[in-house]
Length: 171
Image (tube, rainbow, N blue to C red; front, side, top):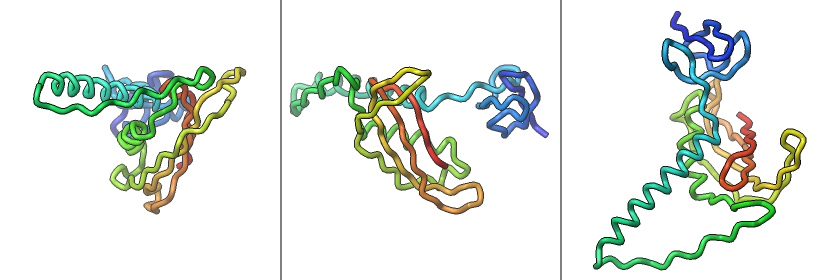
């Protein structure tokens, strides 16, 4: 049996395990010396994709700007930041980020389909005993469960200033 070492309790666990059977720590891929990495959080994955899109956009903009024959369309000004709730999430960017991130956690990643990202809604949640004003974004998608049945999954993501505060995805 192939195995890896839990990053938290150092117990030996099955190579395909996503949770340690001894301490219930979430496990990622294998790092140095066969020790399981901590899984990348959904927020970190989204942030990396947001940054990647921004860098590609900046490079593309500088390339297009160097061509004197190109016609550029005026860019609408960004939405103002709501002082109470922060930056309103862009559903187009979120749709792309989620379409790259969600399949990684599915039983059958190839079954992922019909991702829908709903318009953000202002919300307030309690995190570690403190109330946080943020945006709630609803999502839904279809994917096969562990038994092979295609089912509709729902989720919510609470965000503030393009950072994920909390995620709930009901598999």
